[in-house]
Image 1 (spheres, rainbow, N blue to C red):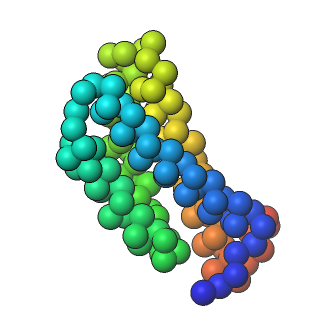
Image 2 (image 1 turned 60 degrees about the vertical axis):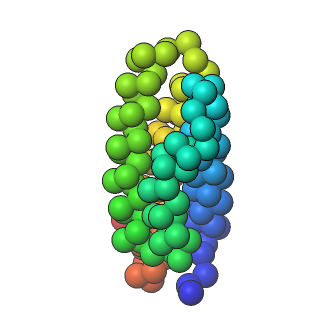
Amino acid sequence: MMERGFLTRWLWIVLWVLSGALVLQGGLELLQLGARWPVWVLSVLPLLVFLVGVAKDNLVWLIWYCLLLLFYFISAVEDTFARPNNIIVVSGLVIIVLLFCVCTAYLRFRGREKRGMNPFKD
């Protein structure tokens, strides 16, 4: 595996922190609604499946993960409009937006690293 630069290492860590926060936020939201743990597992299972490929630093899996995040974004926007004063729901939307931005930045800079290009030069 190719060594990551400073920026991509930082983005990699933030990607995992935000992914974990999204999983925890989903659990908190379902607890607040009174749902049981199987519902939480079903809601985060797609994320976990794609994170297996992302863990291998496979950029194609990360692209598909970004696409999956768009579906979670749609759901989060609907939830935010339904319950705009709920901090857990709003935090989910913020986490998804930040995670999508971090993933796309990682894709850009890591892809350039893997091709042997300077990630800061256009």
